[in-house]
Length: 295
Ligand SMILES: O=c1[nH]c(=O)c2[nH]c(=O)[nH]c2[nH]1
Image (cartoon, rainbow, N blue to C red; front, side, top):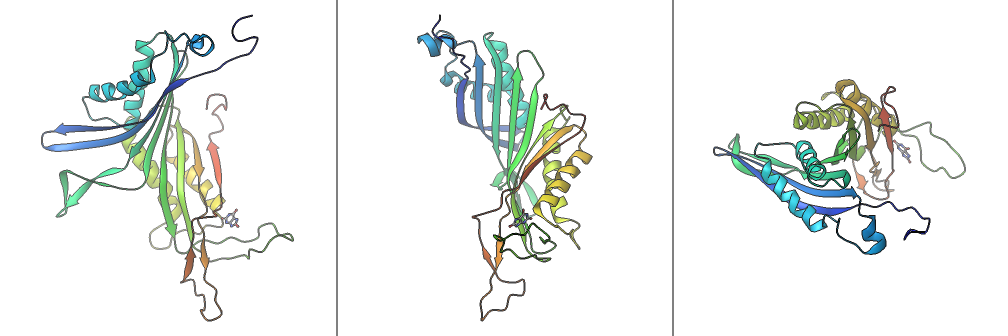
């Protein structure tokens, strides 16, 4: 019997939260991207775990250095998705004993500043909603690309209600046809084919999610529950983006509670703002033809 004594070992290693900023200079117009990068390698290094033999290990420090090397090699402005794919490919190309690479990136939302109504050549401001990317690249088998958005926090002050829910002896919540709705959207979507412009597709999906929640600018759209709104948002993304195979949405219900005091009449105007506890609502919507085994 070997070192595993009849047991089975699965393992991976890499480096997490490697922070890199890439600046591209196109004349005096500059472009910046800031990424926090996680790299994870599945490789034939069982002996390191079972025998203390490190000869096959691509050091996690090397993984960290490679993040910077591949950023340098991206001579042309690129999306986080394109960079993640290039980084994953680097590991498969350079290390024959690596069988699968996962690269996960969170991009900080730096946006170009506007000064005197003009886009600034090199001034940026940090927004809130983050861009996320996860690439899984096996040596044999298709690349999987999951993009997403996190901390896309939105609210509307009307056009939301919640009624006719299950009632029992523990229920105290009353039905309402008027309330505030607020959530911090975390969404990921899986591509069945790569879009030609990944940055534009990311921006488009982010906008589709928020705009479906708000509805038209003058009237909005009524939300009977976070669940129903979540479903409409995911459906809108699948309808608009044929290259998306499935959408996952996580939408906490952030409560704004009516202030009801004997001496203050509540007229949908003064609320207790909270962030916890919050409702937890999530769902995945996939095209029927998408095999579950693939995604
Ligand atoms: O939109 C809602 N969905 C729920 O599941 C729920 N539960 C709750 O207490 N309030 C709400 N609101």
